Amino acid sequence: MELKEAVIVAANRTAVGKANKGSLVNVRPDDLAGLVLKDVVERAGIDAGLVEDLQMGCAFPEGEQGLNMGRIATFIAGFPHSVPGSTVNRFCSSGLQSIAIIANRIQVGEIECGIGAGAESMSMVPMGGNKQVPNPALAAEFPEAYISMGHTAENVATRYGISREEQDRWAAISNERAVAAIESGAFKDQIVPVQAWRLKADKKTKEYFTFDTDEGPRKGTTPEVLAKLRPVFATNGSVTAGNASQMSDGAAAVLLMSRERAEKEGLKPMARFVTFAVVGCHPDEMGIGPALAVPKALQQAGLSVDDIDLFEINEAFASQFLYSLQQANIPEDKVNVNGGAIALGHPLGCTGAKLTTQLVYELERRNGRYGVVSMCIGGGMGAAAVYERLS
Image 1: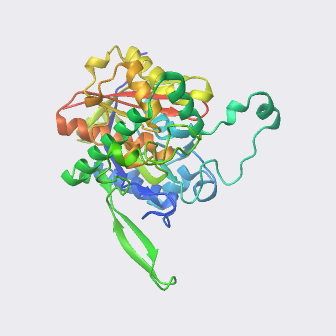
Image 2: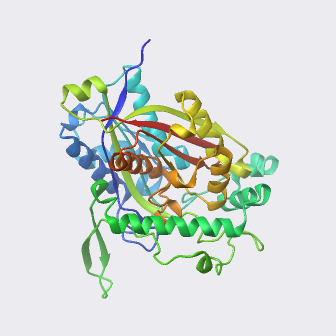
């Protein structure tokens, strides 16, 4: 069977807020999800009724982002009841997995139009969820199944010789690039403004404001400044709050169609979904996931690192990020050119859709052809997708 081409016809994201203390702390994740869904079909200029399936990535689908948020978000977006929705959880790659599911369904001819999205409020649903109940037998026999992400980052740094100096160096670069991107307006066209609110000084009256700029990047961050921070997960460790991703809130959506349907609707595709790969690794060094997933995805696509113009690789921690670059032979000047999660934040289940959005917009800005999105995944996995810009 000959596969159809799955193409991206519109993509968006909210600006990313700092969890627990940022601009989106009072905004429900299902409202963020509904906002990006409504906007992405408006960007394409299509009737929402054309959407035949929706997959919504979410790493902790409970509380305000529970009850099948993917379906709830279609109601909030005002979509017809004929548009189905589902919630996908593969932790940090949930948003990317959602896109892959929709793209695969298009490729095999099951649907012609769908949305892969992601939303996460780490303000409202904490890391690990509201109620953690590990399996007692598994915890006793294989405690690594529940190891904290910070400790896995320390393991990678120790086992593979990623120094504190190198981690802080990259963290400074990530912030520098992110600040430059924001100041140049590189993200402006892809961001959906959010009507957020906070309490006034009287702690009773709501004050509404528009949130449209990523608030994580720290201007003036240098390796010297970062060197003053204390390790978080180990007394003599190297992972700090400055060289790890930020807890964040945000949402993103990617609208895909078969190429034939896009042409019928008179739409110009932004990019073609080429392939997706997911791999497993030992959970106590889960951060090495991209080092395994990127080569697999490139092999599936029949491409090499040299063929790729841009990489968006999630900076869960500088240690695992730098190790992955080394192992996959990815040049630093091709990766996270507008900063990464250390500066811009990591809204878990949203991240894959967010990075895909950033990638396709940046490929257009730079007249690039191929791009890769990749990330490590809690539990010991890695995922990667390859895209081709169409013009």
